[in-house]
Image (cartoon, rainbow, N blue to C red):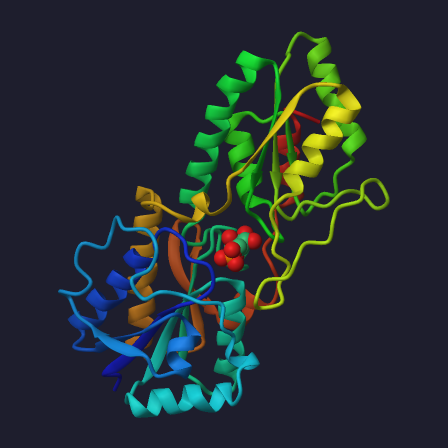
Length: 343
Ligand code: F6P
């Protein structure tokens, strides 16, 4: 019988993590299962940094952004004896298993660990919304709200100055935030990693708009958007401490090229980590709560190797391996709808 579980948050933070932690602790407590929170993702498991979480230490968390546990991008498969140290952590703290709240990187490690016999239940979170098998990840809808508000604000100033406003949003491999906020805010072009862009076509479209009396434009670009082969040189981004490209800045290149091609003045806003901060929307709080409760129930029932997924308005278990087998990108049908307004 399960009596003690661990919990961690890994990868980039996002709004809604605390609501998920609160829900896991609350549901586990109902079943007399104790919950132990590891500090800073897998790092805390490897270094045995852990504190017991109780109803009183997880009160008042629903509306709070960030994660009370802290997070990191440490990957146990890149650390010396990572898997053995995780097994040891479970033994030392007499844990029956782990609830792992993470995005694609953290959940991929969780899938491999599960295959090696480590009992894990996953909860998907990332503002990028690119985890497969779930229609939504925790944090995405709050980031969309923030980005949409930015588009709305840029609209009025763009209109006053007759400018092109380029808004760069996050989205490393998938353009979910760009597509949703661009559609919601009525952007005049949306550039995403899934659809390589033609900067000449963007310039022509903005000129055409101006020709029909619209003297300002909004372009929303995902940080991971790529030009069509051979059409535009984009500088290689520097690497972060984990060897991943540190994205952010493509908006400048796009604004420069638009100015050169159209002669219209352009300005750039890089929204950056503002999208990851702040209080979660009501929907993210509800999603995180549903997922937290379901994850606790899966752990209580020893149904390891599963991830909570939002499908058809319900939270259901799916195999972790299914969720991490591929990335969930923006479908052509959705982008087609967006394009109706700028294509
Ligand atoms: O993985 C989510 C994400 O928000 C990406 O869109 C972005 O590239 C990345 O995190 C940036 O993360 P950090 O600056 O924390 O390394």
